[in-house]
Length: 327
Image 1 (cartoon, rainbow, N blue to C red):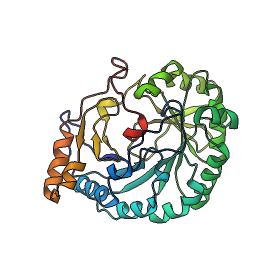
Image 2 (cartoon, helix red, strand yellow; image 1 turned 30 degrees about the horizontal axis):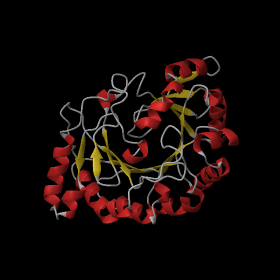
Image 3 (cartoon, rainbow, N blue to C red; image 1 turned 60 degrees about the horizontal axis):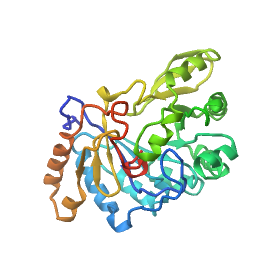
Image 4 (spheres, helix red, strand yellow; image 1 turned 135 degrees about the vertical axis):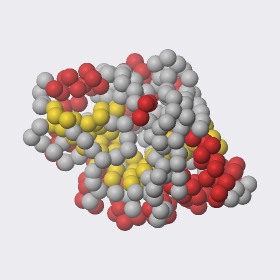
């Protein structure tokens, strides 16, 4: 299927990150304030059928990759039913899930049956007390979810670690060895100034080039690749199957190859994680828009995609929380 969604800068958009909820059962300090309760009410959320209509329109125009995210997607009721609907859309070739894995043990089998093939799990620490300090959550539930997902046959399973100076940067090698032991892929992520919480974490920023240099002193790193539509640049640890991805929105941004947009649970399409450009689909859906006009709306939305974010130049620019955007 040819891609019909080309933004003003010549980039083809073929990847949607779909937020199915803005709620989460953790409170990672760089994402949501600990006392945050101002979640949208469910009537403002898109229904499963509305989500399917939007994704079907984008798929008909060349979108092939879809990642289900949040908030924490597993807190959305009947999520496997939605995944079943999405997996049946012609043109969607890659259907994946991002999760904190707190509730994954209960849902792994159903999600695999519904059509999720691979998952990304946020995990910033392997130390129970530190994990609790960062997320206010229980590490045992996450590890249990990971092992259940592994037994269910998800592959690959990618561990996403936000590296933070003075918080967890002393666990980099421990996380690497954990991923070698369990045949997981490891991805390091730089902190991003999205919302007040993200900006408060900026003091913990670590350049991943420094992390890569540090690992090179202990491990032989060779070029590596991984399937997927994301921005990570990969290396492989020689003598193992471990691939390590580096996601560097600050030190080495990847805007020139950006192929993705984010659909929030309220029907807002965000064209850039680091900008406020957006397009509202919910009013159109609830006014009875036709399928043909919905396709045209998707084309119009992509014309709003900016050239790049401005995290360094304008760190105060984006005020929404990451959980509201779809990570």
